[in-house]
Image (cartoon, rainbow, N blue to C red; front, side):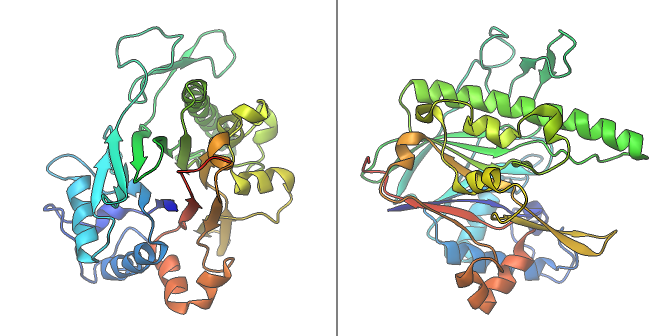
Amino acid sequence: MIRLATYNVEWFTNLFDQNNQLIEDNSWSGKWNVTKSMQINALGIVFQSIDADGIMIIEAPDNGSGLSSVIALEHFAEHFKLRQNKAIIGFTNHTQQEIAFLFDPTKLDVIHDPQGYPPPHGDARETPRFDGVFHLDVDVDAKPEKISFSKPPLELLVIPEGGNPMRLIGVHAKSKAPHGAKNRQQEVRIAIDNRRKQLAQCIWLRQRVEEHLALGDNVIVMGDFNDGPGLDEYEKLFGQSGVEIVIGVSKPESETLREPHAEAAMSARAGGFPTTSRFYLHKSKTYLNALLDYIMVSPDLGRTVGPIWKVWHPFDDPDCFDNSELCDALLTASDHFPVTIDMDFTQRG
């Protein structure tokens, strides 16, 4: 059995200095009312507890200007004696939030293997590489807009020990939050514009998924989509969430990705489905829970022995709730919670 995870670590980069070493002191981290030392110790407990063979880290440490996301993560792994002690990234970005994969090299061989034509070449009708530009008419004016990722998805070729190769795509899709809005009118305009761009990114991702499925590849798409079925009032305006587009809910079963948490949300839009994140709303002084993080698998993988998905939610998962140390660590480490999948990649159902 192999365990994979996706985990959005809130401002992981703030925990490292210019030498890519952990800052274990009582200065504030990027997480509200949590010191760097508190967050580092909490993350150590979480990573040791989930014990995954490979972890897709969303908001991984910054890479550039002398900083190295890979070195920082490997220092983190060394500090906590994690067996997941090798890291890999793909195309870097300018947001200080990279997408990286931390893995156990005795269990997985991992290669950065981006697909699509590289920028600035290629036909606009083809699927470009994720560090390029995707052309799509998102505002129905018959003029295709240029869509890009601020955080290009991480495409990996992963070969499990004794298992079949698989394609992993790590995703941090665009946030739909109307940042910068000064009034309700601007809020609506920015929110709709952001949703259009987020959906365009998901259409781009779906095209890549379909290319892999056509080749018979095992595909896993994992990460933070900043979206989900029934998540906001604008979904009716556009017909589908970005998550539903990537899964391929309108496609034949042989082309539809499996994700039980998303499926639960689609069948129970009024509530009663898992959540993977918890945000404090300062205006209302309450917490908002949302389903944002997913592990989607191709149909063949969905029929392997297992698979078992798990959200490591401090309150909703009994194992997490009953372990007070882990429960506190999950709340302190990030505003998102890990999602894992256990499955046997050597067998087909």
